[in-house]
Length: 581
Image (tube, rainbow, N blue to C red; front, side):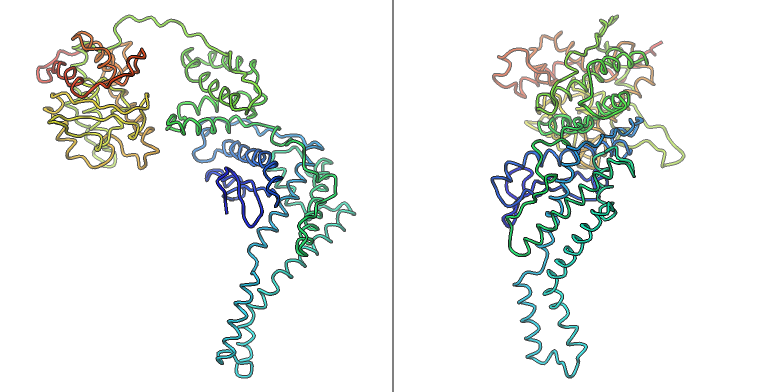
């Protein structure tokens, strides 16, 4: 029975290190659902060897991740980027010894697992008694139905002879291996040799001396393991191999051979998700990590140097990437991953710690937010929006996107919320309280930058324009996207936000130097300050973090927010507005 210790299995007085294999990586690990390494029957020794065993298993997981990326597996972050060539690791005597020791332990682990599946003495006894009962009742009769009598006893005979049959097979294989070892014929372990070379990406060409040495070591390991299983058949569980090649390594060479950059990235994202961050799986950074792997030509994080990263940065700039993109996306992603790996003792150093890209000061020629005229033009286009008619119904615009184009700009104008916070709204995120409609922006619907929910009262004009009616008629779940599961809410909400931004740009209503969706966020803060609203209340409505320690005391109530929201003037959406030109 598995204990509470992580990556630890205990059953019938035996111990294993165990790691579950993510579903996407199973095809690269023989279809298995988990990796396990036996640790023996002594708890103290098992505990001492546990960490090294887990490291070896994690190395296999990391290599499978790299293979998955290089193979272009579905969902792999490197789908859209050409992958680096596979890096092969030379076989050394230390690696061969560790591989032989792993094979030795695996054979014994397979024996233990098979013995657990063998019919127990109790099961054999129960089957025997069942047959005797049938004989006593006349259901089985040697004289009347000799063939039936033989068939009825076959299961019992098979159960009784299963262990002996298995013992004979193991003894025969052991003797065959001894004969082959003396002649230099290693074909009996060819499958195991191929698997080991593939799993660990070793440079061991067929027919090479290194591969012959590995095969010979695996033969010796299997002979020793089978010898020990035969001793266990006789009740001796204390035996240990005296073959020097099978002595446990003082430290894992395999675990230190390579550290997958892709594996580090995925582990980093998982650690962030456990803190409620990167709920989109690091979608914004996957291309950056894949691009670095492509530039390096390998996936080994241990081989990355500061010079590598500086050259990569310069190459990105030369390819036309904006300095801000290089700084805030590409370098930020790699710095975060390598810093995390160094802080968690996965890497000895952080080569990215001092790699930076200066960003030129942005020249701003106008306000960041919309003017009243600009905002009114956009809100009129949104409120009056009707999707274009398509002769083929299959090409008709999706209704939730049409609703998003109509309502999200209006919601943004009267809340100053981030665009994705609005496109991820669900029906359950709105309620009536004391006669007023309240919108709850919550991480449960997707993503909130602060990680905290907040309640925002709806402006009366939103209700009068029909948003409440739209909400009441809407189906349960997301209002503006149709992601099938909560795990995909963030990605879908961002996609809809991007489509709204592109739509506004196509209309020609977005001035230069204004972000289509964020223009309303800036405008909301500007209008709030003009009317003398307390900054802390504006921050609470918009989801901005407080600037001082005192901002963390007391609560900004719905009443305080209503005073600010209701002070915003309505937009005139009926009077014709002159075109932009």
